[in-house]
View 1 (cartoon, rainbow, N blue to C red):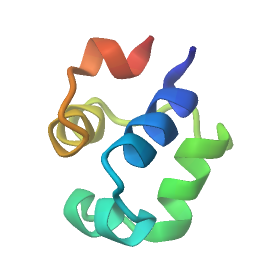
View 2 (view 1 turned 135 degrees about the vertical axis):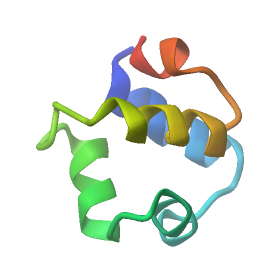
View 3 (view 1 turned 180 degrees about the vertical axis):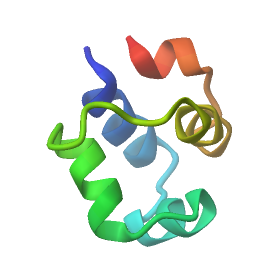
Length: 64
């Protein structure tokens, strides 16, 4: 699985709403949706690191 699938799966696994994750990541919900859909594929590394913390995983696991 790739980054976008891993983000969505971890979010669902932890029962986190898109709104919750986007607020903690300090980005808008549409931006997070674009991460998940693959529209934005070049996610800044600092966002991946913070996203990994929010989703209780590692950056390398998120990246696939």
